[in-house]
Image (cartoon, rainbow, N blue to C red):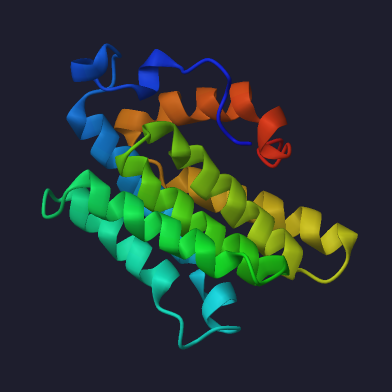
Length: 172
């Protein structure tokens, strides 16, 4: 589980009673897509003919641009996560990252799921325990470098608050 039991109002849009602006929601979606795309080769090297995770990333970006409805991106996220189920290791986690990114359109707090699964993907693909810890730290740093200033503080605080339920991947 990557979502807290009690929803953080900072990840609920203003029109639904929270404090998240539409522009902030779109930035979270684009950042989640970048996190997932960064590890997508781990999936595509194992399943090059399965387009579902890549399509999920494309759909969340299209949603962020206002080109498709939330339900289309959410459905693509489900398909990407279905692609993960038969796999293991880095490929599995990379597909989950893409799925989590796509469902940010529906629930903004899935942004951290995309990032956490991307870190798990690189850790699983690294040979050996020391290498996987180093790979995870490097991936987390890369992700943080991609954060737009407008959402940096929000995401960094979210990482701190949800690190434990996200397999402690943000402790770098």
